[in-house]
Structure formats: C-alpha cells, structure tokens
Amino acid sequence: MVQFTDLPTDVVDTILTSLPDFRTLSAAIKVSKVYTYAVFNSHRQTILTSVALNLVGPSLPHALKVVHCRDQPDEIINLKHDESMEASKAFLTSLTYRQRRFVEKSSSAVQKLEDVFSQIYKDRRSPTSVLTNAESLRLRTALYRIWLFCIFIEQWNNDDDDGDENEDDDGNENPWARWNANWDAVVAWLAEYDTPDLLDVVAVAPFLQEVLRRIMNSDPENVGAVYGQCSSVHSSEDGVPQSYLPTEFPMQSNPIHNPGLVYDLLRDQRRWKELIEGSEVSAAMFKIALEKVCVAKNLNAETTLAVAPLRFINEVHGADDKCFNCDEVRGMDLYGPPNWHFLGGVMSATPITQNLPGLLLRSPIEISVISNNFFNRDDFDWGAFTVEIFDFEMPVPEEVVWDKEQWYCQTCITKLFTTRFPWWWMARPKSEHAPAKENCWYGWNCRTQLHRPGHALKLNHFCEPTRDDGKSPEQAWAQVQDSDA
Ligand SMILES: [Zn+2]
Ligand SMILES: [Zn+2]
Image 1 (tube, rainbow, N blue to C red):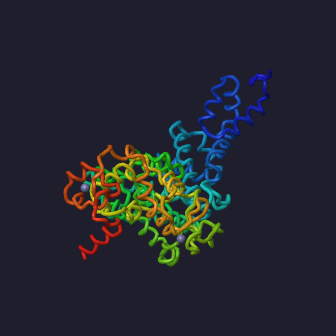
Image 2 (image 1 turned 135 degrees about the vertical axis):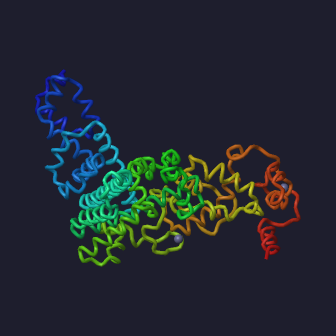
Image 3 (image 1 turned 90 degrees about the horizontal axis):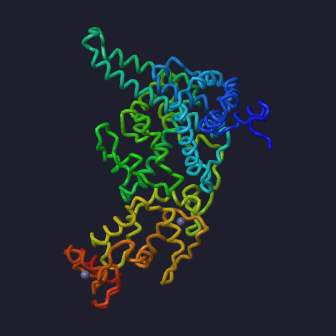
C-alpha cells in the first residue's frame, strides 16, 4: 500500500492547494512535520492563496480587506482602493489564527446571505444561490464594502470618544475640525468608487434590511408584531436590543434563514447591524455620506439612494408566474415547498387564528394557550407547520382544492391557514398544547370564558358545545358582533 509519505511532493502540494478551508489545511500540515509541513512551508503563499480562494471565492480581496481593517481601522483610508489579488496574497501569509477563523466565519455568512438573496430576488424555487458568477461577485463585493463603511463609522465613533478625553490636554483641539475631517475622509473614500460600484454598495443596504425584517418577523418573541414595533425593543446598555441576539433565535430548524450565522456576523460589527436596522446613527451617516458623495460625483441623490437590490441580477426566474388559486401574476411573491420557510418572515399568527369558532378569538386564555404553546415556541417552524396544514384532511368540504406542490400568493396561503387552523388545532392531541381539562358544556360559545379568567382557565373551551342554545359557532359569533354594534 502506498503511504501518504510516498507521494511525490508535487502531489502533496496539489492536495494542500485543493483543501476547502484553513482548518482542514491546518490538520493536513500537522500530519507530518518533515513532510506535509515542509511542502506547505516551501509554497506557503501559493497554498494559502488557493485555500483562501477555495473558501471565499473571487471576492477574496474584499473579504481580506474587511479582516485587515477590522483590526486596523485606520488602514481603511490608507489602503485606498487596493483590492488586487497581489495585495491579498501578501496579507494572507500574515493572517493570525483568529483572523483565519474570521475569514471562515464571515465567508459562510456571506454565502448564506447570497443564498437568501437569490431566493428572494432571483429564483424562489432554489434554496441555494443560482446567481451567476458575475452576479455573485458583485453582491459579495458590495456586502464587504458596506461592511468596511461600518468599520469606518465605528472607528470614527471611537475617535470621538478619545477626542473628548484628550480635549483639555490638546488645548487646540476643535471637535468640529475632527468631525469635518472625518466627513471629508469618508466622502473621499466612497467617491473613489466607480459609480456602478458605488450604486452596488447603496443597493445592498435595502436587501440587508429586508433580511433583518424577515428575521424579526420570524422571531417567536415577536410573532404577530411588525418590524416597526419590534425596533423599539431596545433594552441593553449598548443599545443592541436583547431580543435581536442569536441566542434568542434558536431557529436551527429553519436552515435557510439560519439567523444565528447571519447574526454572529452582524453582531461582530455593531455599526453594520445598526445600518441594517435603518434606524440608527450608522444608517443616518450612510445616507448623509451618500448625499455628499452624490454632490462630489455630480449624481442625482434621489435616484442614487433609490437603487434597489434587483440591480444585482440580470434575470428573474418565474417573474410572470401566477398563483395557482387566484391566478394573479405574483412572481417572487409566491410560496411553495422550496420557500415555505420564508412564510415566517412575512406572515403573522393573527390572521391565522381569525377563523376560530364561537367566541374563542375573544378569549384571552385560549389565545394565550395557542400563542404560548405554539406560535411563540422557540422551536416553532413555519415550514413544518405549512406541511402539516397542507396534509391535514379537513372533516368538512372546502371551497378550494389545495395542492401542496403548487405555488400560492400570500393572500391565498393565508386563506388556507385561516380555514384549516381551527380544525387542525382541535385535531391535535390535547397534551401537546395544554394540560387535560374538562370540557365546558357551552364549549366555544361560552360567554363566561370572556369575563371570568378562573372559569376560562379551569375548563376547556376549544370544543363543540354540548349544551347550548342551539346556535352554530357562526351564529353565536354573529350574535356577539351584533351586540357589539
Ligand atoms: Zn392567490
Ligand atoms: Zn365555559
């Protein structure tokens, strides 16, 4: 049997250069100090460059610039716009272990962002990116560049803090001079990008905001809430809303969003996170900086700031597709098995529970049983829920024949959820969502459940009335509505 150490060095070299990431490379060169390590050592720069390219792809120079400037923010301006592969090669050999880990982490997050981008804007049928190489490179380049901007703003902010402390010592320090110099620097830096590159940086921001909006909407803590409401949940000292942090998003069952990964990345640069939230200092500064750049480059600020993420793609797949139920052309706003997980980002529990029979919708107790034990559960998975709803066999005839393999618009899929949810919920084993309770005689039509929490808690009301005034749930509901009117 041929031993690894029998292989010619050029074969070992080929093996090392084809490894997918730094961790594997590190394991491989530890195999033998005199052998694999020796080969690595003699071709250090080429091997590192090709492993880095395998890992990050052609956006490597941009990724490395972020890694570098993250540790040395002052360099952003000095480095100017040298994004050549040559500059990257030199930098690669000096990467620390921590920096290599960061390259790995950030590139998988950027990959994930590209997958999400592709499924939102280009092809809803594919959970992994179908962007062309050119589209992918443009998107990733813009992602890394906007990240640099955030590092710059972070550094600026730190400068301001230092400035305050040193003001008396310096005596002649004029805070406004520093402020203006920083503005000039950031504007000059942005203005140096060619106009198309600059527009790419502008266009990537609304995409990131959209991702964030969807993650927020999927957050079990905020089911039913809209983004505007969520963004007021600022609680921790550094202004980062606690509920935004990855530990609060245990949605591993939702691999496409995989917000933990994206959030790790966002948290790394608070300014980037702020920029995406669109409500913080960085977002305002980004806008002001762009307005100044527009003046410098003689661009129309209104049209420049309005560029959209669609800018990155040449062709949208299925843009003219229709909803299987209502026949409306809805294109990317259609939902089918490959993107059901996105429903969490666009739906809320509120319309789904609209069709609860009798007075259940008015009962705070029953509603909280549903939200606490279902929609608000950390492991709640919209994709799995949608499968169950489609598979559910309704005990009563339905107007619409639903087909799990088809694509539906949000309005129609909401209709499906609304119609089936009460029946589906009732058919679930009770132990799954509530302790076994005796049924109230008046079932969902019981009026007492609305004003006596003790009664509502003690008895189950998610059941058909066994002793009532002969009214159907619809009649009872109509009666309540009449009496309210
Ligand atoms: Zn429809
Ligand atoms: Zn009752």
